[in-house]
Image (cartoon, rainbow, N blue to C red; front, side, top):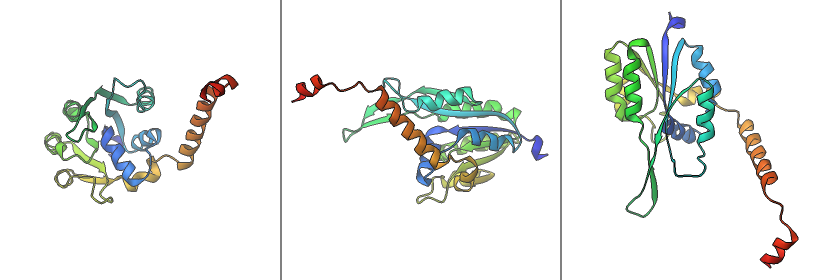
Length: 204
């Protein structure tokens, strides 16, 4: 039965990033997809994130592009920038409504929902999906202090799977990250214009 279970992943990108950052590892999204393809019939893998549109280069754009081409349904919307009371620039980009709408729409077509978020705002959504007969597993972490999973969400979910227990199966090799950063630095050096003796004279 478990091999035929229809499953869908709903990944709150910002929340998952904060949880893995707290645990000290990066997600390998190819490995994550492979992991859940082995757990049943993967109907859909959604990834939700807000994007800052007024920036010349978004650090998350390469990830979004990769996910788009490699089996994920990526849902984005423009993030809103504002200045708080202390004068600091903040970014607001809540994707809860988009995730909830898709989850309700998918509920009649799946047996098991995997929610990658610890946000307590999803309690009502989880309850609504469960009333349709869908099992809901929350993926986040309770090993950090404070916990990344809201207590009310832990109570509502059918189970909570700790990211720390999945790190070996869905985490990126730390050596790969170091190599990627080195390649990026090398490309930057190659792309940088050569500094001429005239430039040096102008600075002097």
